[in-house]
Image 1: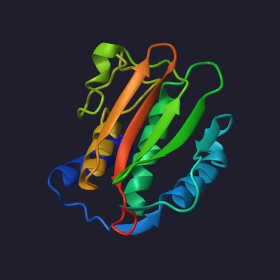
Image 2: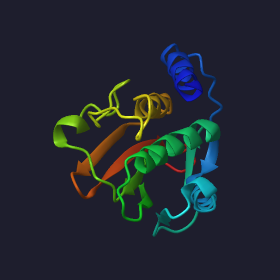
Image 3: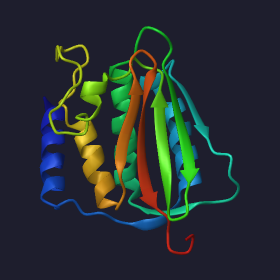
Length: 180
């Protein structure tokens, strides 16, 4: 119940533009490397395989709020964990560098999301899992919060999924002016 109240409070503050953002230039390669390393050693994620793919060279600087970006990543990872199957869950991070922005893809090998539900997963209180049972939990706010935070960063968020094969959540961040 506390988690639901926290999510509702945060969502409401985001909706009213009352969450302070502290934007700064950060090296997204280092940030994601550190984030994935932390997740690998998180005892709550024991048995989850994590990897980060980036075949570019050198730093890539984006404009972001470190704390809010961490919340985005954790909400996406938490969603993957909630709906994992019996097999070992694998979560991969990929960084795609564009001319003016970067795209971060977080993919899993979970059960996937049905096509009809996919277009609604970023709506508040929407849960693709119809039974809304206590096993999967969740408020239906996690991905709605992700969307609001990424939009505050001037980015976009979307998802692709195949039932039975997994889901990939993508979001963009703007490169810092020095990088463009």
